[in-house]
Length: 236
Image: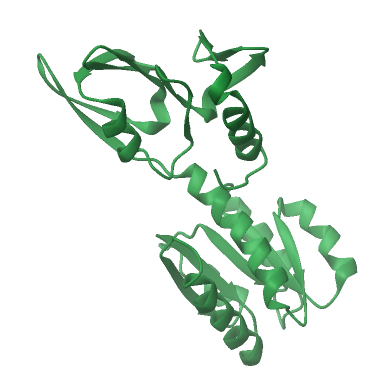
């Protein structure tokens, strides 16, 4: 689920953007939850809600989009902000609040869809899951945020994490299915790597979580492309 806030003081624009998101929802694999707000003040009054993406008009009555974004950034440094504006020269001010991008009014659907899809991919790559392992001592919960890579040896998987290595009897196919849609990719038949933790690549070797792993020739092109896409926020 991706939670989106649309903030615009013009009802026609709010309805247009809401319609575009509904159209895009049918084209992407994510569930979207969209809420609209008539002003920055109305949005900021909802202090308990958190969002993945904020689509924010710059030119609004009262508190404008830049001032609203500054307030948002004081509370949330991670939420993605995309400005919608009819003043292209104002979009440069988005750097003040680490805005991801901007869309020019009147909003064209195809430009909108391209920019939003890129944002969804970034959000997707940030998402985490918990994996429950059955261990000889009982149970172990692992967050994918803490998982460097998974190694298969015989009938066992070895989970290399920042809290040590954990073993479970399972197949690589099983863990690939569990991690589908996250930033994990095979560099060879033995290793499923969290791209988040790849610190370097040197010819057929990569450094991940302090370990050096081999990239197999058949998987090299696809793996390196996935790594480049991940670094650029493009879908895997």
